[in-house]
Image (cartoon, rainbow, N blue to C red; front, top):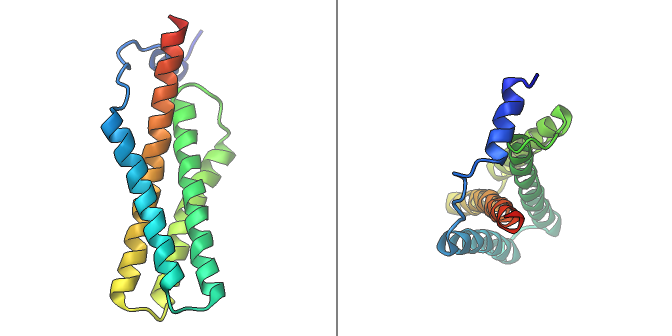
Length: 152
């Protein structure tokens, strides 16, 4: 006998109403937002008057954050589609996402930067994270719909 969660997952995966392929405009906007966020953040680091190890710290936080949010989005989507995801991986994905945001916040709080620079790094970082989630979601939506179309 199927429990209600398994039933919901099957319904989502096979739901014919989920045929809303992301528009080209939304896919493009997501990619542009990701590139603008990442490139702006990196240009800011390149031009910043800080030690190389500080620049490395902030660059690593960006990469860490991007990987973490893609991992969270993938885990959430996999669970939604009935793909097994361990609670450990799911929890670690959320933990690392929050850790990257916390590490950036602590780094900026203690940095010898103008408030406007701190705001710039914070906003370009968050734009990058949000856009990475949108790009990953679009990719999964397109794959799911194309898979259904090829099966038909």
